[in-house]
Structure formats: structure tokens, C-alpha cells
Length: 120
Image (cartoon, rainbow, N blue to C red; front, side, top):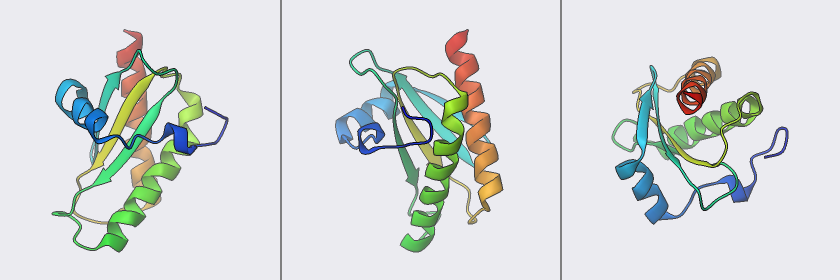
């Protein structure tokens, strides 16, 4: 992945792959986000998806804003971590619309936990 990029090839959209990440993958949780991850041998780079539930955020405007903030926090912080070929799904579950700093702290914490888990 480029220095500060998140291109279309790094976005996880296939529903069967998403289902396998949720069913077979492992889960890490922080204050406002969860991270589901699955090691993939068939790909050479990282793929990621972001999700915000309709039950906690009824308005699409709020869901889209939270996803934009999550993507930006991920994009700016991923160069610090060498995660290899994994499929990642970030799920936001807090009931309020957070500030960017809160989301960035959650994403950083989850990525740090994931990198420690992978290395051990």
C-alpha cells in the first residue's frame, strides 16, 4: 500500500469474503470500535471494510460521516504498522457521533493490538 493511500483495490466489497471474516476471523474490541480480521494467503496486500449499524445511527448522514472519519484515521495511521495480507473489517458500535480524535484513538489502538497479535 502506498504511503498515504487507500485505493479501490484495498477496499473489501465481496459479501462472501465479508461473511467469512465475520464467521471465521478473530475479533478485537476497543471503546467505540471492533476489528474483525482474517489472514489471507490468496492476496498479497491488505483489504479493509468499514461498517456502522443502522440500529445505532438511523440517519445515513451520520453513518457516512463516521465511515469517512474511520477511513481517514485508518489511511493516515496504517503506514506505521506492517500487517501483511489480511482482511480487516472495522465495526463502529457507539451510539453517539464521535469527534475525529476519538475514532483515531480507537483505530490506532486496534491496529496496535493487531500488530502485536500477528507478531506473537
